[in-house]
Image 1 (cartoon, rainbow, N blue to C red):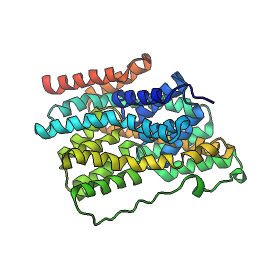
Image 2 (image 1 turned 180 degrees about the vertical axis):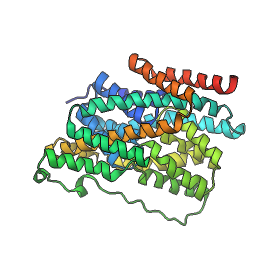
Image 3 (image 1 turned 45 degrees about the horizontal axis):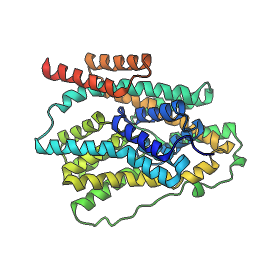
Amino acid sequence: MKPAYTLKDLCLYFLKLGALGFGGPVALVGYMHRDLVETRQWITEDDYREGLALSQLAPGPLAAQLGIYLGYVHYGILGATLAGTAFVLPSFFMVLAIGWAYVEYGGLPWMQAVFYGVGAAVIGIITISSYKLTTKSIGKDLLLWIIFAVLAITTFWFEEEIIWLILLGGVVVWFVKASPSWLRFSTNSWFPVILLQVQTSLEGRLWQIAWFFAKAGAFVFGSGLAIVPFLYGGVVKEYAWLNEQEFVDAVAVAMITPGPVVITVGFIGYLVAGFWGAVVAALATFLPCYLFTVIPAPYFKRYGKHPAIKAFVDGITAAAIGAIAGAVVVLGKRTLTDIPTLVIALATAAILFRFKKLQEPYVILIAALVGIILKVVL
């Protein structure tokens, strides 16, 4: 059946999302569901859920992988490539510009004031996005709610997404809702493992950047936020490319710019080795997640409607959304450190819940101004 949209339409949508989509991975996957499934009906609920499940199963940034998969649904490799590129490019150019200003003018002293307001508003945005994802995807299924709760609690308790629990959620629903004897495929056929082998003795800063960020893209599971601890261990502790404050500023840049949070790798790459450092860091991070999405995608689509696979995907989806909900609480605990930030977050959530058509960038702008007033003016 011919899709209800053109490849150009899809690319323009992801360009807009990459340029205006604030709130991190939780909010971004929520926007995709709202815009592409509910409002425009370009993507079916099943295709979206399959994409979300695959994005959670594979390593790499969640939102970027989901965008790549949704591009693949009707337009194959070309659609996946163009959708993913359109999604990443706007925020990449933004962090390049901020990186240039950071280096040229010796830091961004106003950034912490902006982040003070924006960070709190982001918690409100992702709370609403998580709520919508939960109610839409889980419904009234008790088993899915139990899996959701287990992952939400464990993610909050351990402050990380536990991939084997997400996989276990899929297995549990599979065994409960579909006979395992129906499953007629091997994991070797639908989810090939890519082994990235490079010479670790390669010299030169750009080769070091390429190797380190390729590992970050290939072996870090979960949302884009999950990459932050890995990056800290490498760029601050192992290689000493950045100091503590510079790394904090890099994370702040990721949060105050739209698009995938993992785009902070472009900012870090720029600080380490200029323009080409940013390009190499971004390419090395996103290439593995692109491959981990498009290679299994045809097998996932082919077998995704099978009752056993559908049950497995339902379990994975419930577990993934539970992990996202737990991550929201963790982020809130770290970000909402005083009364003003708590008020900003609650006000943001209440406003977005009440005015469902309000665009998030307007809320982000107001929150940034509030942060500057509270931290700089007053």
